[in-house]
Image (cartoon, rainbow, N blue to C red):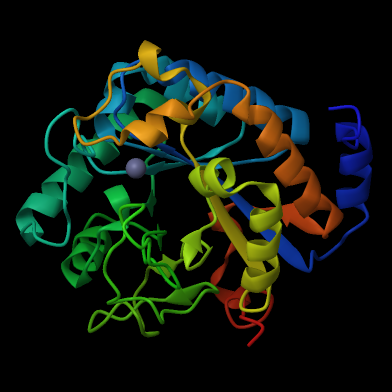
Length: 301
Ligand SMILES: [Zn+2]
């Protein structure tokens, strides 16, 4: 911890940048994992220390069970989104790739209502459970008044190690773009802006950081930065709580559970410090205004 720059120095550094060259979208996925809520508290304190405003995606059942915590996220200035209704709970995963339009819209509507009831704010930002999405999901999101999605697994294939084992959207843009109703991989005229979770074969997330380590994460950031000025990073509250204190879905892998601990915050500290040193500044999805999609949000390719 001693070699970290102080939050004060970090704030001075970011204040000097009028238009950041690189943007960090720090996101948190609150899957429905009872017992994971202390991990969200830890992440909120982490975000305060770095003065990061996060985009936080809630499974509807998480929001329903911990409404005070959802409200706390809003009170501390974070952006609220939804992440399925149960995400899968302790049984089968919700899969937007095979569910009907009506079923998907029901999941989205229930989650939206749970977050709105807890916070007083209607969410307009969505991430599909397991990044399992298809074109009907876009229609359901449009019909529920959403503005942003962060589910298209561009440049990602988990090679049997994560949950993304399909290549349909592999060549999707890495930088923000308006989705097309004909194919989520191409740009279109949807009212919904895609903020694809960053990846370069492996995802830019906490699991990658825990498993592959900081040097590989730094290499990935270099590769991702060649395609986009944005880094959309994600982590889960359950990664910062010991596994035996939580109730996981039956399909949660043992190796993943083994690496869950509060000390992972130290690794996250080092990663964010690296991003700050590279000139990344934190930003919310709602900062991606319409008029900026073709300028500051355009990809660097
Ligand atoms: Zn999730």
